[in-house]
Image (cartoon, rainbow, N blue to C red; front, side, top):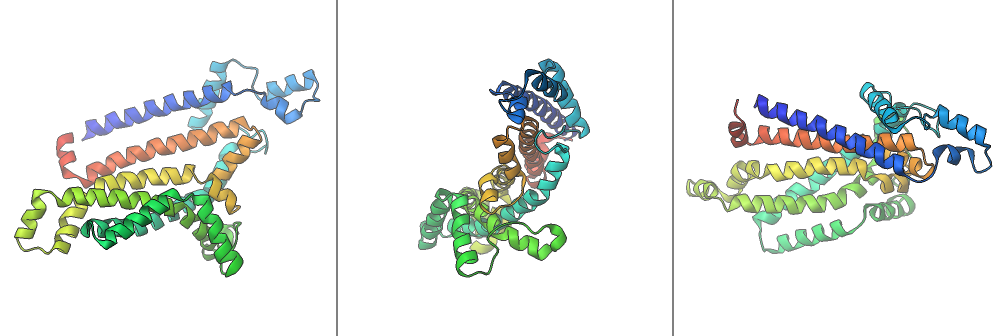
Length: 317
C-alpha cells in the first residue's frame, strides 16, 4: 500500500512538472508581444525595450521558465500585466466564487443523477428507463450557457424571484451569496447530471448481473435490499470517477456560465486574461486548472483503494 502510494505521488509530481513546461512553452510561442499590446503601436522602441526588461521578457527561455516554476512552488505566481497585482491574490479571490459554484453544481448533479440512474437500472427497458434515458440525452445535448439564459428569462425576468446575475459577496451573507449561485450551478449541473445518470445506470446494470446478486436474492433479500446493500457499493467506482472528473470540468468549464451570470469567478478571469493578452495570468490559471485535474485524478485513485477492498489486497501492505 505504501509503495503504491509512493509510486503514484512520484507520478503526480513528474506529470505536474511536464505539464508546467508544456504550458510555459506553448504560451511563449504565441504570436505577438505582451509589452507591445500594453503600450500600443505608437510606443517608442526605448519605452518598449524598458517594459520588456521590467517584465522579464528579454531573458532566455530556460531562465524565465525556471524563475516562473520556482515562483509557482513558493506561491509567488508573478504580477498581472493588466491589473498590476499579484496573480496569486487574483486567483484566490476568484476561487471564493468558482469553488462554491462547482461544489454546488456537483452536489446538484449527484442528487439528480444517482437516483435517476439507479431507478433506470432497476426498471430496465420499462417506461421509467425510457423517460430517464430521454432526460439524459436532452440534458447532455443542451449547452449550459443556454440553460442559464432560459433560467434568467424565467426566474429573473418573468417571475422576478431570483437575481439575474452578479455576486453580492460572501460578506453580504451566506443566503444572498448562495441565491446568486443556485441558477448558474443548476445550469452547470444539468448536462453533467445527464452524463452521470448514464454512467450510474450502466455501472448498476453490470453489477446486477453478477452471481453474488443472485445468491443474495436466493437467500431471501428483496430486489431493493440486494440493490442498495450489494449492487450500489460495488458500482461506486465508475460513479466516483465521474464525480471527480465532473468537479474539475465544472471549475475549468465555467467560463461561459460565469459570463452569462456576470460572476467574477476564475473562468471569467481566464477569459479576461485571454482577451487582454495577460500572459502571466493565462499561464498561472491554465497551470492551476491542469494541476487540479491531475490532483483530482490522484484523489480518485486513492478513493478506489478506500472503496474496493480487493484493490487494497492487490496493492499489498
